Structures are given as C-alpha cells and as structure tokens.
Image: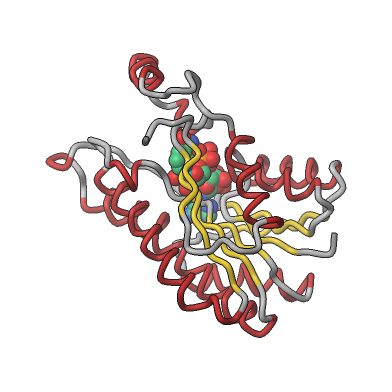
Length: 243
Ligand code: NAP
C-alpha cells in the first residue's frame, strides 16, 4: 500500500503497536521517539519484518520546530503524509496541592501542545493533497477525570476539543480528524501503577480485563484506513469502563 503515516511516540507501548499494525498493511511508517532509541529501532525492524517501510525520527513533540521537522522529513522522503497519529504522551501524577508547576507544564506541552505542533505541520501538506487523516490519542481520563491527574485530564480533555475544532476546520479539504480514548491499557505507563490500584480499576471494567495495545491499534487502523464518513468523533476503547 502506497500510503505514509507519522506516529509520534512509537518506540514502545500503544504507539509501537500502531506502527506494527499499519506496517503490516505495507505502509511507509515514520516512527518518532524522544529518548528510547533502541526500542524505536526494534519497532522499525519489526515494521519491516511485517512488510512495511520504516523511518526513524528522533524529536520532542513539545518543540514546535522539531515537530515541523518531523513532518517535513516524512514528506521529503515519501513525498506525502496521509496519516498522522498524535500518540506521544506522558504522565506526571500527583494531587493538586503537591503538583509542581513543572509537572503541569510538561504534561500540557507534550500531550496537548504536541498534538497541535504536529497537526499544524501536517495540515499544510494534507490541505494541498486534499486528503488526510489525523488521529489523536486521548484518554477516558479526559472524559471522566481522575484524582491525581489534573494535568493529564486537562490535556486529554483539551485534545478532544482540539479534535472537534480541527475536524470542522478541515473537513471541506478532505481531512478527517478523530480521537481515540483508551481506558487502562497494559504498557510501561500503567505498569508503574501499584497492584492494589490495578485491582481496583479492574473491578470497574465490565469486560473484566485491562486492555492491550492491540485493542487500541485495531481501532486506529479502522479510523486510518477504513472509516470514510467519520470525523470529529471520540472512539472510547476501554472495556466499558466509562459507560
Ligand atoms: P508509554 O508506553 O509510556 O510510551 C510513550 C511513548 O511516547 C514513548 O514512545 C515515548 O518515547 C513517547 N514520548 C513521550 N514524550 C515524548 C515527546 N515529548 N516527544 C516524542 N515522543 C515522546 O505510553 P503508552 O501507554 O503507550 O501511551 C501512549 C498514548 O496513549 C499516550 O498519549 C497516553 O496518554 C495514551 N493513553 C494510554 C493509556 C494507557 O493505559 N496506557 C490510556 C489512555 C491513553 P521515548 O520513550 O522515546 O521518550
């Protein structure tokens, strides 16, 4: 398949799985990472094993210019950008009284401004192409809130508003913009939670298990390659948690 996607934060976790699933379709996959070079190389090798073409780009999505360079490097190499997946994200959890200004700023600038930075760069090319897809990885925490995650919840709720505004702004140019809101997915991000917290969460998930990165990646594949008449939506992938 002669399509090209850029996935931010694809060195591990959900981003890596999205890279593998899109790579399997034979796509050109641009794998962005910030610090985990070795893991990003492993993702790239696996994308190629599965029949895709991989390119690695180090860069911090919180940085406007590095985000522009990421998208430009993709277009320089593959001639276009069909799909952008804004997946890179971090947590810096603590209760509001203990949350440092830096914890707030870091989470907002990576999780929310990062999506703006990369989308701003991508939309310029997608408008010229008169087609494109942007998928933003939000979270059920942006819909429900969560104690200890005021910064993260604000960023993820912001991503949802951003998705809808951008969808309305770009629909006439053939650009579809959607968000995916995962619940609790087993990755390094959630491995850090104490077992007791995981047990508590599990009790509230009707499907009775934590999600896997593949549960999210399959939905991203659908929105990236199949769904032709969906834009401005938030698809919740959480085993029923946020019902
Ligand atoms: P993860 O395993 O911690 O992986 C995070 C990825 O983001 C890594 O590849 C990391 O790359 C990259 N990253 C972090 N900061 C970056 C930056 N400034 N610039 C570029 N890349 C950066 O996390 P995950 O669980 O897969 O989460 C992926 C996304 O899903 C995040 O947006 C997260 O908020 C969202 N999400 C996750 C869950 C869950 O339960 N896991 C639930 C809801 C939503 P480096 O290692 O190279 O820094």
